[in-house]
Image 1 (cartoon, one colour):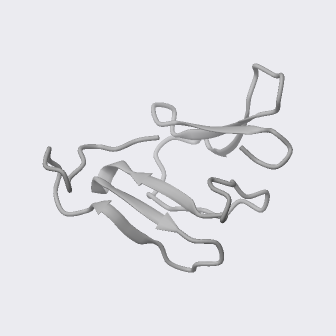
Image 2: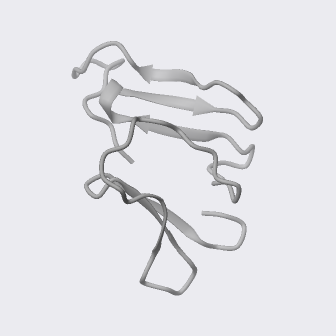
Amino acid sequence: MNKNGSLYVVNNGNIEARRYPRGESQGTVVAGGNGRENHRVMKWMEGVVVDQLGTVYVADSMNHRIVRWPKGATQGSVIVGGKVEGGESNQLYASVG
């Protein structure tokens, strides 16, 4: 959610991200929507606030990991998973969301 109250939702099936302004049920495509992309993380000028410190967390489903991007970082760091898929306490299987 951004500071204006718009909710951002990723639709993994349609490979797109949509913005839903507060009180509206029809979202606008703000990223993707053109079929399969090349697994990039893109910075949107509006930004997406995830926590009070501005840290963004990315679920990288193809690599079975969660990556943390602190505010101002030029590179993220893996905080869980990233080796192989699995069910152990330090593994993920196709994480999304």
